[in-house]
Amino acid sequence: MSTVRHHVIIGSGVAGNQAAETLREHDPDSRITMITISRLPFFNRYDLPRVFRGERDWRRFIIYPAAYYRDNRITLRRATRVVNVDSASQILKLEHKESIHFDSLLVASGAGAYLPEELSEFRPLLHGFGAFRDAVTVADALPKGGHAILLGGDTIGLDLARTLLDTGHRVTLVAGPYTFWPHEVTPEERPQYIAALQRMGIVVVEAQSRGGIAAIEPGAKGLSARKLTFEDGSELAGDVVMPFFGIAPSLDFMLGSGVDIERGLLVTPNLRTTNENIYAAGDVCQIWTDKARRYCFYHGWKNVRAMGELAARNITGANEPWVPTQDEALHLTADGKIQSPFWEYQ
Image (cartoon, rainbow, N blue to C red; front, side, top):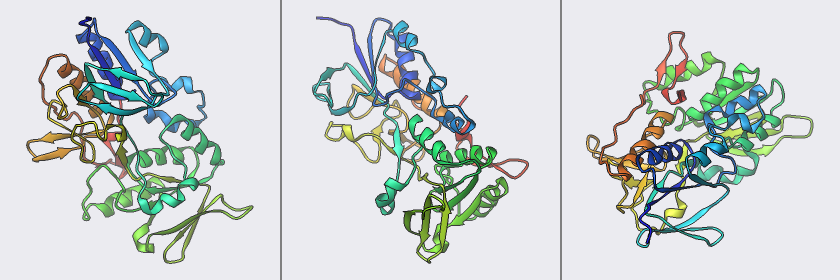
Protein backbone atom coordinates (compact mmCIF):
# COMPACT_ATOMS: atom_id res chain seq x y z
CA MET A 1 0.00 0.00 0.00
CA SER A 2 1.29 3.43 -0.89
CA THR A 3 2.50 5.58 2.01
CA VAL A 4 2.36 8.81 -0.02
CA ARG A 5 -0.04 11.19 1.66
CA HIS A 6 -2.82 12.81 -0.33
CA HIS A 7 -3.52 16.41 0.64
CA VAL A 8 -6.77 17.77 -0.77
CA ILE A 9 -7.59 21.48 -0.81
CA ILE A 10 -11.10 22.76 -1.51
CA GLY A 11 -10.79 26.26 -2.93
CA SER A 12 -8.28 27.95 -5.22
CA GLY A 13 -8.03 31.42 -3.73
CA VAL A 14 -5.30 33.06 -1.70
CA ALA A 15 -5.49 30.61 1.22
CA GLY A 16 -5.69 27.50 -0.95
CA ASN A 17 -2.78 28.41 -3.21
CA GLN A 18 -0.55 29.50 -0.35
CA ALA A 19 -1.34 26.23 1.40
CA ALA A 20 -0.50 24.19 -1.70
CA GLU A 21 2.83 25.97 -2.06
CA THR A 22 3.68 25.36 1.60
CA LEU A 23 2.55 21.72 1.49
CA ARG A 24 4.79 21.06 -1.49
CA GLU A 25 7.71 22.66 0.36
CA HIS A 26 7.19 20.68 3.57
CA ASP A 27 5.99 17.38 2.08
CA PRO A 28 7.76 17.12 -1.29
CA ASP A 29 6.68 13.53 -2.03
CA SER A 30 2.97 14.01 -1.34
CA ARG A 31 0.04 14.18 -3.73
CA ILE A 32 -1.72 17.54 -3.74
CA THR A 33 -5.14 18.04 -5.31
CA MET A 34 -6.87 21.42 -5.44
CA ILE A 35 -10.58 21.48 -6.26
CA THR A 36 -12.44 24.64 -7.22
CA ILE A 37 -15.80 25.56 -8.71
CA SER A 38 -14.10 28.42 -10.56
CA ARG A 39 -13.49 28.02 -14.29
CA LEU A 40 -10.41 30.23 -14.04
CA PRO A 41 -7.16 29.39 -12.26
CA PHE A 42 -6.19 31.49 -9.25
CA PHE A 43 -6.83 35.17 -9.96
CA ASN A 44 -6.66 38.24 -7.75
CA ARG A 45 -10.25 39.28 -7.06
CA TYR A 46 -8.95 42.52 -5.55
CA ASP A 47 -7.88 43.50 -9.06
CA LEU A 48 -11.38 43.18 -10.51
CA PRO A 49 -12.02 46.96 -10.47
CA ARG A 50 -9.46 47.13 -13.30
CA VAL A 51 -12.18 46.05 -15.73
CA PHE A 52 -13.59 49.60 -15.37
CA ARG A 53 -10.25 50.90 -16.64
CA GLY A 54 -10.65 48.87 -19.82
CA GLU A 55 -8.83 45.67 -18.84
CA ARG A 56 -10.93 42.78 -20.20
CA ASP A 57 -8.34 40.05 -20.88
CA TRP A 58 -8.87 37.44 -18.17
CA ARG A 59 -5.31 36.19 -18.64
CA ARG A 60 -3.96 39.43 -17.14
CA PHE A 61 -5.73 38.64 -13.86
CA ILE A 62 -4.25 35.16 -13.46
CA ILE A 63 -1.62 34.84 -10.71
CA TYR A 64 -0.06 31.50 -11.67
CA PRO A 65 0.15 30.06 -15.20
CA ALA A 66 -0.74 26.43 -15.88
CA ALA A 67 2.96 25.56 -15.84
CA TYR A 68 3.18 26.51 -12.16
CA TYR A 69 0.78 23.75 -11.15
CA ARG A 70 2.45 21.25 -13.45
CA ASP A 71 5.94 22.06 -12.22
CA ASN A 72 4.87 21.82 -8.57
CA ARG A 73 2.86 18.63 -9.15
CA ILE A 74 -0.38 20.19 -7.96
CA THR A 75 -3.46 18.70 -9.59
CA LEU A 76 -5.86 21.58 -10.23
CA ARG A 77 -9.45 20.54 -10.90
CA ARG A 78 -11.47 23.51 -12.12
CA ALA A 79 -15.23 23.81 -12.58
CA THR A 80 -15.64 20.97 -10.09
CA ARG A 81 -18.13 21.06 -7.24
CA VAL A 82 -17.76 19.19 -3.94
CA VAL A 83 -21.18 18.14 -2.63
CA ASN A 84 -20.34 16.12 0.48
CA VAL A 85 -17.50 15.38 2.87
CA ASP A 86 -17.47 12.22 5.01
CA SER A 87 -14.97 12.93 7.76
CA ALA A 88 -15.15 9.42 9.24
CA SER A 89 -14.17 7.64 6.02
CA GLN A 90 -12.03 10.57 4.78
CA ILE A 91 -13.85 10.71 1.47
CA LEU A 92 -15.32 13.65 -0.38
CA LYS A 93 -17.85 13.32 -3.17
CA LEU A 94 -18.06 15.45 -6.28
CA GLU A 95 -21.22 16.55 -8.06
CA HIS A 96 -20.60 14.12 -10.91
CA LYS A 97 -20.54 11.23 -8.36
CA GLU A 98 -16.77 10.72 -8.20
CA SER A 99 -15.31 9.98 -4.76
CA ILE A 100 -11.87 11.12 -3.63
CA HIS A 101 -9.99 9.83 -0.60
CA PHE A 102 -7.88 12.26 1.42
CA ASP A 103 -5.32 11.91 4.17
CA SER A 104 -5.65 15.58 5.01
CA LEU A 105 -8.29 18.04 3.89
CA LEU A 106 -8.00 21.81 3.93
CA VAL A 107 -11.27 23.66 3.45
CA ALA A 108 -10.36 27.02 1.91
CA SER A 109 -13.56 27.57 -0.08
CA GLY A 110 -13.85 31.21 0.93
CA ALA A 111 -17.14 33.06 1.00
CA GLY A 112 -19.74 34.45 -1.34
CA ALA A 113 -21.57 37.76 -1.32
CA TYR A 114 -24.29 37.94 1.33
CA LEU A 115 -27.71 39.31 0.38
CA PRO A 116 -30.27 40.05 3.12
CA GLU A 117 -33.41 37.95 2.82
CA GLU A 118 -35.66 40.98 2.38
CA LEU A 119 -33.85 41.83 -0.86
CA SER A 120 -33.68 38.30 -2.28
CA GLU A 121 -36.72 38.80 -4.55
CA PHE A 122 -34.82 41.57 -6.35
CA ARG A 123 -31.74 39.43 -7.02
CA PRO A 124 -32.35 39.21 -10.82
CA LEU A 125 -32.07 43.01 -11.03
CA LEU A 126 -28.82 43.23 -9.07
CA HIS A 127 -25.30 43.06 -10.47
CA GLY A 128 -22.81 40.94 -8.55
CA PHE A 129 -19.06 41.50 -8.37
CA GLY A 130 -17.58 38.24 -7.07
CA ALA A 131 -16.10 36.82 -10.28
CA PHE A 132 -14.37 38.03 -13.43
CA ARG A 133 -17.47 37.45 -15.55
CA ASP A 134 -19.59 39.42 -13.06
CA ALA A 135 -17.16 42.33 -13.21
CA VAL A 136 -17.19 42.43 -17.01
CA THR A 137 -21.00 42.21 -17.11
CA VAL A 138 -21.51 45.16 -14.79
CA ALA A 139 -18.80 47.20 -16.53
CA ASP A 140 -20.61 46.64 -19.83
CA ALA A 141 -23.91 47.71 -18.25
CA LEU A 142 -22.49 50.96 -16.88
CA PRO A 143 -22.22 53.62 -19.59
CA LYS A 144 -19.55 56.30 -19.68
CA GLY A 145 -20.30 58.71 -16.84
CA GLY A 146 -23.03 56.34 -15.67
CA HIS A 147 -24.59 56.09 -12.23
CA ALA A 148 -23.90 53.12 -9.94
CA ILE A 149 -26.05 52.58 -6.85
CA LEU A 150 -24.22 50.57 -4.19
CA LEU A 151 -26.28 48.95 -1.44
CA GLY A 152 -24.82 48.27 2.00
CA GLY A 153 -21.31 49.55 1.41
CA ASP A 154 -18.91 46.96 2.79
CA THR A 155 -15.18 47.47 2.19
CA ILE A 156 -15.27 45.56 -1.11
CA GLY A 157 -17.96 47.92 -2.38
CA LEU A 158 -16.19 51.02 -1.11
CA ASP A 159 -12.99 49.91 -2.81
CA LEU A 160 -14.90 49.58 -6.08
CA ALA A 161 -16.46 53.02 -5.48
CA ARG A 162 -13.00 54.57 -5.50
CA THR A 163 -12.32 53.19 -8.96
CA LEU A 164 -15.76 54.16 -10.27
CA LEU A 165 -15.26 57.74 -9.17
CA ASP A 166 -11.76 57.81 -10.58
CA THR A 167 -13.06 56.64 -13.98
CA GLY A 168 -15.70 59.35 -14.21
CA HIS A 169 -18.78 57.52 -12.94
CA ARG A 170 -21.28 58.69 -10.35
CA VAL A 171 -21.74 56.66 -7.18
CA THR A 172 -24.59 56.70 -4.68
CA LEU A 173 -24.28 54.61 -1.54
CA VAL A 174 -27.46 53.43 0.18
CA ALA A 175 -25.91 53.11 3.62
CA GLY A 176 -27.01 50.94 6.51
CA PRO A 177 -25.72 48.53 9.18
CA TYR A 178 -23.29 46.83 6.76
CA THR A 179 -21.52 50.03 5.75
CA PHE A 180 -17.76 49.70 6.41
CA TRP A 181 -18.06 45.94 7.14
CA PRO A 182 -16.03 44.11 8.42
CA HIS A 183 -14.74 47.12 10.33
CA GLU A 184 -16.53 47.77 13.60
CA VAL A 185 -17.57 51.41 13.59
CA THR A 186 -19.31 52.82 16.67
CA PRO A 187 -22.36 55.10 16.38
CA GLU A 188 -20.18 57.95 17.63
CA GLU A 189 -17.55 57.34 14.91
CA ARG A 190 -20.00 56.77 12.06
CA PRO A 191 -20.74 60.44 11.18
CA GLN A 192 -17.06 61.26 10.55
CA TYR A 193 -16.62 58.24 8.29
CA ILE A 194 -19.82 59.00 6.37
CA ALA A 195 -18.55 62.57 5.92
CA ALA A 196 -15.27 61.13 4.63
CA LEU A 197 -17.16 59.15 1.98
CA GLN A 198 -18.94 62.31 0.90
CA ARG A 199 -15.63 64.15 0.60
CA MET A 200 -14.48 61.35 -1.70
CA GLY A 201 -17.39 62.18 -4.00
CA ILE A 202 -19.86 59.48 -2.95
CA VAL A 203 -23.47 60.56 -2.49
CA VAL A 204 -24.69 58.90 0.71
CA VAL A 205 -28.33 58.07 1.38
CA GLU A 206 -29.16 56.55 4.76
CA ALA A 207 -31.67 53.77 4.06
CA GLN A 208 -33.15 53.95 7.55
CA SER A 209 -34.01 57.63 7.18
CA ARG A 210 -36.21 56.69 4.21
CA GLY A 211 -37.79 53.68 5.89
CA GLY A 212 -35.68 51.11 4.07
CA ILE A 213 -35.82 49.75 0.54
CA ALA A 214 -39.32 48.94 -0.71
CA ALA A 215 -38.62 47.84 -4.28
CA ILE A 216 -36.06 47.60 -7.06
CA GLU A 217 -37.51 47.67 -10.58
CA PRO A 218 -36.40 48.02 -14.19
CA GLY A 219 -36.38 51.64 -15.30
CA ALA A 220 -38.84 52.97 -17.84
CA LYS A 221 -37.86 52.89 -21.51
CA GLY A 222 -35.49 55.73 -22.35
CA LEU A 223 -34.61 56.31 -18.68
CA SER A 224 -32.07 54.77 -16.32
CA ALA A 225 -32.02 50.97 -16.31
CA ARG A 226 -32.92 50.64 -12.63
CA LYS A 227 -35.30 52.38 -10.23
CA LEU A 228 -35.01 51.96 -6.47
CA THR A 229 -38.02 52.95 -4.33
CA PHE A 230 -37.86 53.57 -0.59
CA GLU A 231 -40.65 52.96 1.91
CA ASP A 232 -41.29 56.70 2.22
CA GLY A 233 -42.05 56.85 -1.51
CA SER A 234 -38.84 58.56 -2.59
CA GLU A 235 -36.99 57.13 -5.57
CA LEU A 236 -33.45 56.74 -6.83
CA ALA A 237 -32.57 55.98 -10.46
CA GLY A 238 -29.33 54.44 -11.67
CA ASP A 239 -27.75 52.34 -14.40
CA VAL A 240 -26.77 49.46 -12.12
CA VAL A 241 -27.59 48.42 -8.55
CA MET A 242 -24.91 46.42 -6.76
CA PRO A 243 -25.22 44.77 -3.32
CA PHE A 244 -22.31 44.91 -0.88
CA PHE A 245 -23.53 43.47 2.42
CA GLY A 246 -20.48 41.52 3.47
CA ILE A 247 -19.88 37.84 2.82
CA ALA A 248 -21.19 34.45 3.94
CA PRO A 249 -18.91 31.37 4.19
CA SER A 250 -19.23 28.89 1.33
CA LEU A 251 -19.62 25.61 3.18
CA ASP A 252 -22.90 23.94 2.24
CA PHE A 253 -20.94 20.85 1.22
CA MET A 254 -19.71 20.51 4.82
CA LEU A 255 -23.19 20.12 6.29
CA GLY A 256 -23.44 16.59 7.68
CA SER A 257 -19.68 16.13 7.47
CA GLY A 258 -19.33 15.53 11.19
CA VAL A 259 -17.36 18.70 11.95
CA ASP A 260 -18.72 21.57 14.03
CA ILE A 261 -20.19 24.58 12.24
CA GLU A 262 -21.58 27.86 13.54
CA ARG A 263 -21.60 30.56 10.86
CA GLY A 264 -18.29 29.18 9.63
CA LEU A 265 -16.27 26.05 10.29
CA LEU A 266 -15.15 26.13 13.91
CA VAL A 267 -11.41 25.60 14.31
CA THR A 268 -8.88 25.59 17.11
CA PRO A 269 -6.05 28.16 17.14
CA ASN A 270 -3.99 25.76 14.98
CA LEU A 271 -6.82 25.85 12.37
CA ARG A 272 -7.93 22.25 12.91
CA THR A 273 -11.63 21.42 12.93
CA THR A 274 -13.23 18.91 15.29
CA ASN A 275 -11.81 16.21 12.99
CA GLU A 276 -8.04 15.77 13.29
CA ASN A 277 -7.62 15.30 9.53
CA ILE A 278 -9.59 18.38 8.44
CA TYR A 279 -8.34 21.95 8.65
CA ALA A 280 -9.82 25.24 7.45
CA ALA A 281 -8.37 28.58 6.42
CA GLY A 282 -9.64 31.92 5.16
CA ASP A 283 -13.10 33.47 5.17
CA VAL A 284 -14.75 30.08 5.64
CA CYS A 285 -13.61 29.52 9.22
CA GLN A 286 -14.02 30.90 12.73
CA ILE A 287 -10.93 30.63 14.90
CA TRP A 288 -11.10 30.16 18.67
CA THR A 289 -9.52 33.16 20.38
CA ASP A 290 -8.58 32.83 24.04
CA LYS A 291 -8.49 36.59 24.58
CA ALA A 292 -12.06 37.10 23.34
CA ARG A 293 -13.23 33.67 24.58
CA ARG A 294 -15.13 33.09 21.36
CA TYR A 295 -14.75 32.01 17.74
CA CYS A 296 -13.80 34.92 15.47
CA PHE A 297 -13.58 35.56 11.74
CA TYR A 298 -10.45 37.20 10.37
CA HIS A 299 -10.63 38.86 6.97
CA GLY A 300 -8.29 40.57 4.56
CA TRP A 301 -5.80 39.32 1.98
CA LYS A 302 -2.87 39.24 4.40
CA ASN A 303 -4.77 37.30 7.07
CA VAL A 304 -6.17 34.82 4.57
CA ARG A 305 -2.78 34.17 3.02
CA ALA A 306 -1.19 33.68 6.45
CA MET A 307 -3.94 31.20 7.39
CA GLY A 308 -3.23 29.11 4.29
CA GLU A 309 0.45 28.94 5.13
CA LEU A 310 -0.17 28.15 8.81
CA ALA A 311 -2.69 25.40 8.06
CA ALA A 312 -0.22 23.71 5.69
CA ARG A 313 2.58 23.85 8.24
CA ASN A 314 0.34 22.32 10.89
CA ILE A 315 -0.93 19.63 8.51
CA THR A 316 2.70 18.61 7.95
CA GLY A 317 3.60 18.31 11.61
CA ALA A 318 3.79 21.72 13.25
CA ASN A 319 1.41 22.84 15.99
CA GLU A 320 1.52 26.61 15.77
CA PRO A 321 -1.31 28.95 16.85
CA TRP A 322 -2.92 31.59 14.71
CA VAL A 323 -1.69 35.16 15.14
CA PRO A 324 -3.49 37.89 13.13
CA THR A 325 -1.22 39.66 10.67
CA GLN A 326 -3.43 42.55 9.60
CA ASP A 327 -4.60 45.81 11.11
CA GLU A 328 -8.40 45.72 11.33
CA ALA A 329 -9.09 49.38 12.16
CA LEU A 330 -10.58 51.86 9.72
CA HIS A 331 -8.48 55.00 9.30
CA LEU A 332 -8.85 58.57 8.08
CA THR A 333 -6.06 59.92 5.90
CA ALA A 334 -4.53 63.36 6.31
CA ASP A 335 -6.83 64.73 3.60
CA GLY A 336 -9.91 63.34 5.35
CA LYS A 337 -10.58 60.25 3.22
CA ILE A 338 -11.10 56.76 4.56
CA GLN A 339 -8.40 54.12 4.25
CA SER A 340 -9.06 50.45 4.99
CA PRO A 341 -6.18 48.02 5.60
CA PHE A 342 -8.38 45.43 3.87
CA TRP A 343 -7.58 47.25 0.60
CA GLU A 344 -3.93 46.23 0.95
CA TYR A 345 -2.97 43.00 -0.77
CA GLN A 346 0.77 43.14 -1.44
